[in-house]
Amino acid sequence: MFRRLCFALFALACCSTDLLAAERPPNFVLIYADDLGYADLGCFGAKKIRTPNLDRIAREGVRFTDFYVAQAVCSASRTALLTGCYPNRVSIFGALNPNSKTGIHDNETTIAEALKTRGYATAIYGKWHLGHHPKFLPTRHGFDEYFGLPYSNDMWPRHPSAKFPPLPLIEGEKTIQENPDQSQLVTWYTERAVKFIEKNKDKPFFVYVPHAMPHVPIFVSDKHKGKSPQGLYGDVIEEIDWSVGEILAALKKHGLDDNTFVMFTSDNGPWLNYGEHAGSAGPLREGKGTTFEGGQRVPCVARWPGKIPAGHVCKELAATIDVLPTLAKWAGAELPKLPLDGKDISSLFLGRPDAKTPHEAYYYYWDRHLQAVRSGPWKLHFPHAYRTLDGKPGGKDGKPVAYVQKQIGLSLFNLENDIGESKDVSADHPDIVERLKKLADQMREELGDSATKQQGKGVRPAGTL
Image (tube, rainbow, N blue to C red; front, side, top):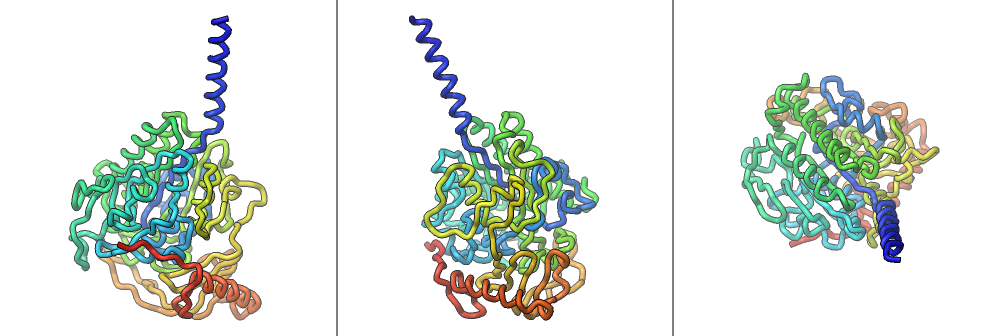
């Protein structure tokens, strides 16, 4: 009798373990580069920068050709990624600095907060940029662990033209160094991520690694210095690729490959006036700080063995605002109660047959100005100013050259056959122009537009001190 009871209890324990394993939600690794250009990875056409680990993710998973950030600048872009909202909805714009008194509002829900409801361990190792005061820090917004910079790495006393206080390196909510050795940032973030994966291998986890690089000033550790045919900038990208490889190796070591979704993308396009210390937008027009494709279309690759088909290329429109609702679905977490702009794009990631973008339209804001709208292959620019090098080379040795200001009038581009936005076809398609104008009017009512002096009925406030 005792023996049969022991066997029954053992069988029940084994069954329970199997059920728990089957019910365990997937792990998520999200790696975010800073100012990485569309053409800076091998799988996106780079010839002098070697990115074998990122190319491997594309080879073993999915590569998105039409993946977008919400605005082509630091804080606005990161806000959209973490909240699933256009930054205009949550009122965080530009690049917050040491003098900023605003940040993410307590009412907003980050990816980390959504996943915490499902028992996830959460960590961020890298650049935050959603507010540097204690109430805005990651540890107040769903992250168990934080180690990194609160804002951009150029906001320090060595900036070439502006004056900034010492740059803090924060652990948790405490500054542990000032003006840290930036050549070690990639290594430090990687080591922390690997240790976090090991520590939490038996429970679901979300680790967010937003690198400070390759935002200027660029630095690289001695182990990667002088290795790339593309000089220091290439060295930096290759070190980021090394970091990705270390994270993938940690997942494999702990048997987590098949239950972990890994995604890599960039916060915006390249900061072109830095020249040799900037990336390449490849065939795309312009770069960071603009609403042209070179500013907001970024490389994106993702991997999830057994779930994402190997070698899949997705040409549908997708965006960082879609990450929160997608991860929430996979984790079985409820969506935030406040309205989102992002959509579930799990079918695009997983390569479902005939999967289409859930977005009827995608909107290109610069600050509060709605400058363009895309629907299908059609992109309509409204009249606006923009910065450009106008064909001239960028700077050398980390020193930028000046942009010139130019204007674009009402212009329609077919991105399927004119990815470089070079031929205005508005005169040939007045019906499409009118349809896109109506879509823009709908968004102006919702999120406003400084050009038409509309506030937007769906705008929520940022957090304030």
